[in-house]
Length: 246
Length: 188
Image (cartoon, rainbow over all chains, first blue to last red; front, top):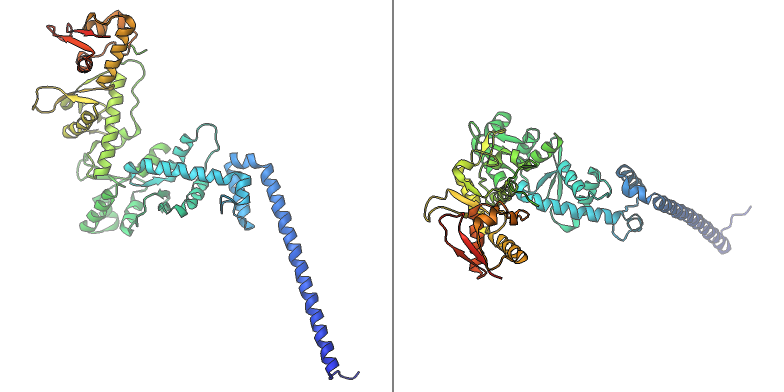
């Protein structure tokens, strides 16, 4: 067969290329449509599922957590916005909003005693007390989620860890490394003395004093001067949660 | 209605009463304000529960609720004075004893005298006992007041409440030989 080198041949080749690429994009289009269809089906299924189990989702915290995880896995964030379709469907947007407000309430109310630092267990207990009238139980996961929702309010609500304790910090302040270290030291006993800190960390007295004064100033420790020797310093937010556990 | 004599259920101490630093005046002013508020609430609740008004700070610090023997902590006298000062400023207490003396004894009003005054006036009006001379003894211990909350109230508080009523022009006090037979006429 003679090679097509003339103008006609070039045109024909161009036409083939066009046809091919048209076919290609047609195929891609179909693929996209198929995917979209799948996503729509998925969304519909999820909606149906959520609608069907709405009551369970509101009432059963373990189930709620699972549904949340599932939604996140497929890239649907039911909490992304109050207007999100999942939020409206579930009423979970309201749930976390409400929870967030109650958390703020408790944090502000207890701030004079604990300097804006509260143990998550203590917070959970207080939330449960507040929500007594037969409403949905709240788990730590819900609290964390509600707090992450508070971000845009710029209230400085933070989740911080000391040793094995999860604490909610409700005062916007930079906790310095020394404070964090000392709090980590006291997380079991709820209290410490200058000697304890010295024994554990071998800091000089000046550094310990400065750290303690700072903690007193911000209200996160209380002084007990009625000891046999030097005063003890208590972390009320640790103490309160510990006494409730016992 | 209240029967007087504070027996019955035990007084429930708040959780913070087992928190050792609660008995040390906190150096942080904001913390102290909160601590003082908690103490004020505790004192008023305690006095209401035991229907007790008179408080001598020097002795009081040796017993509950101002001491907690279990954790061997007690409020210092000067700290308790500061708490009472706060109660006084709220109208929930008054220092007794001669003016200018050491603030050592006080009355805690778990109801403000004006509130007692209103109750006394209401009672007298209901019983048709206005414009009659009544003694403090009758008011506190008489059969006619047995169902009233002010029945069994101490004379000092009762007297202050009646003085409050007098200053409103709704009563007249007549001196007696003792608090007990102090007379009062409540006007309509």
